[in-house]
Image (tube, rainbow, N blue to C red; front, side):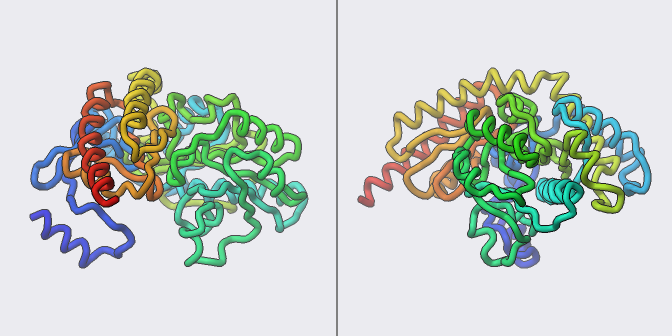
Length: 404
């Protein structure tokens, strides 16, 4: 039956993904099950979306209750869940103004528009520039793609939106070299995800904040993947003592319901987008907003951020053991429950081998194994993951030595 569904999907869906050859049917806790009943330990969490795992009862019940009330009205009207969600995300982030979107890419689009409008209102010019980071990833829409510093994602879709310059992550000198009198913003992921799991260094982010303050340039931090408790803070930047002018979030924000947001300080909100400048039909509708509101409630009630802080060091230690044990692994990189194992060659075979043994992991570039589990995992799940991954690593390393 699974093969039939895959064949039907290949015949009907646009082929923009090289999917793994399984059909996932249901989830429970930190495990997924395919159509044939095979069980998988999930260390991908839908690319960081399912922070609470699957079938978290209070979350499910809140969404069912909202379905029975109201799903959508449009932004011509107010709705209570959106107001509640905005108040809660303001509280955990310390930001002042919120705009709800449908995805992370849309949040980046809104952040870019906000920065350019802020600069336009200062001087009336339309030639402002944005500095982004090499090896970054911000999304697939044209604006988000334009600030994505990985050429392979952009080249077939040129020309991008104009006036984007690229600097190197964790190199303040390279950022300074790109600044001109037209620079209006610097955008980066606080922890680069798709680019290979590279956290910003503290001194780098603090220097960017100083540079931006000195020149009245806006600092935009992309927290789409690394936010919502993933690093042991609600948002990764909170661990650096650096606050952005604009931030983006999505993925775990809705716990499975498609929703994102961009947030800004009051100063930016008061001097940038005005009525008619930006909009969305679905963004912040009652259903999506109810998901955001309940996610934040559950994270606070169940001390999820504190749990991440307790669990992450154990995950890091077990992964560090692998680095010392297997020649094919060169280093561990990451923050909290967003970790990467950098390998000497392509990791597709290791990931496929792990999946055959009941572990779901993903890559971050061709040579990095990305581990981004639900935030509710315990040490027993880390141990289970390590045991399965080691089997795949032994097989991979054995094949590599045999081919030499």
